[in-house]
Length: 187
Image (cartoon, rainbow, N blue to C red; front, side, top):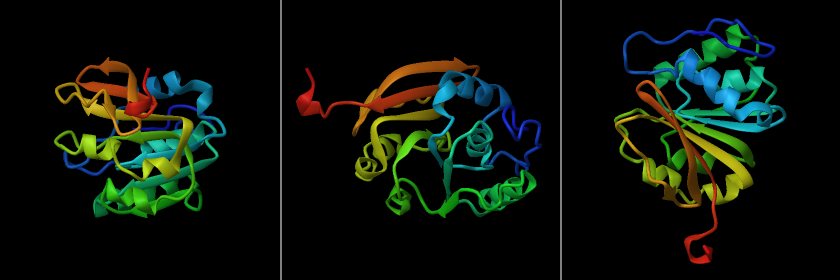
């Protein structure tokens, strides 16, 4: 696993052994950032279920101005710390330790881009998308990308999020959401 593009291009990233943490593949990560394109540069980026930190590090490499990683797995947090140090950005960004979705209450500021990669067996996607904390940490132009196994389709609408695009890469699907109008304001 490596950083694909930007100022940290080619840096190798560690991943824990076994299948407990499933890092986003280089191919999926590359396609994700190709889709996001210029939106990454200068963005504030929130990496949920951060695991190895690869998504946030890729965003940082491609010019994101602010990164916050959130995870609760001690092994993942240790690897994330090692990856930040090996990329020379140990003092960059913020790492929040907590269980999602309630760890969203610990997040401060507003984010342009949010990436969420919960464990594939995770059954709380609707609760994550519908969490009340989104109202204070995203704005009208924010985007959220949810990575899921193709066998686990998330809701097309939950909370303030409305799905507008899905792309598949083998067994992985990326679901793209933007803020929608509240259900009572829809036309």
